[in-house]
Length: 390
Image 1 (tube, helix red, strand yellow):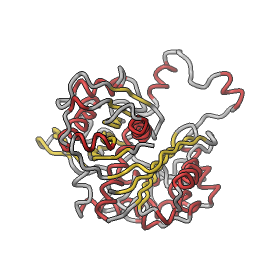
Image 2 (cartoon, helix red, strand yellow; image 1 turned 135 degrees about the vertical axis):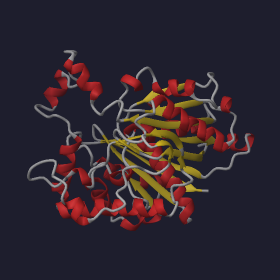
Image 3 (tube, rainbow, N blue to C red; image 1 turned 90 degrees about the horizontal axis):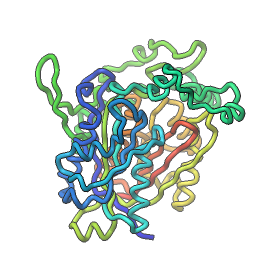
Image 4 (cartoon, rainbow, N blue to C red; image 1 turned 180 degrees about the vertical axis):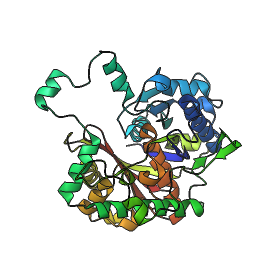
């Protein structure tokens, strides 16, 4: 089978809800990462075969095929470049990468941009369902779905609480994991570890124009006492807002190409895609599927967990990466080495290519060979992508 390569991956610095990126329309934010990726790689924009854009809340300013609108708004892509927008919940742009890689591996396309965008300020989470419900236009849970899952309202928060209970995690353990995420993100920022992956966006603030290049959610002064003081989301539970991913605005993109494209356009790859896996499981506990998807991905790749130098496991809630480590006997020192979504934010549809930007640059910075990325997703689905640094 033909190979697929990652030439580069970029992301914006995260913006808090109502924060520094609130002034950016999501179409323009997505266009900015597309433009930056084309400029950094030096490819001719017209040579891009397709843009696959992940976005979860496809309504309001993210309606009307946001991927295509981002291409039309981009300065470095001609209107002849097609685009499509996909939703695999939190794994949307990771699936964008996998679809892009599959297109390249099949020989049907040579250069595809996988990307994602989410303005959780401008299109709040859940509004694509709740606004329709308020207008009397129905609910996504159909009669057949209700018959199969009677009385169950699928909830990622409840799934996270179920995971914490199933795996025996205490609040103190979850809080300790969250604190470590902030400490790693702060250390990475201060050491310049994100400099090569973040594209700078110009923003307006009450104090005047500013260049946004630091993830806004990081608590540089985080303490055990501060995290431990945050109110639990459910009485008698274990999870607080401090041990959950932060609502975030952001965009990200990666260029996936064939071996033929590398030669034709004189491109230098940064990684080879080794394995693409997606699996589905229990939609009620929902967030546990990365454990089992990783089992399948490693087996298909002929690798063991100890062969993987760095892991990016999305920190939707602290129990997810903690259970993943427990299940695989994985080394915490290799997990989310520059912090995760608890500190850096989780811009839903943008998180897949965002995590890949961080994984790709961290692998090169640390001289590792293999990297693995996985994401829990609504409906009990999980993607796994394994790459090899080249």
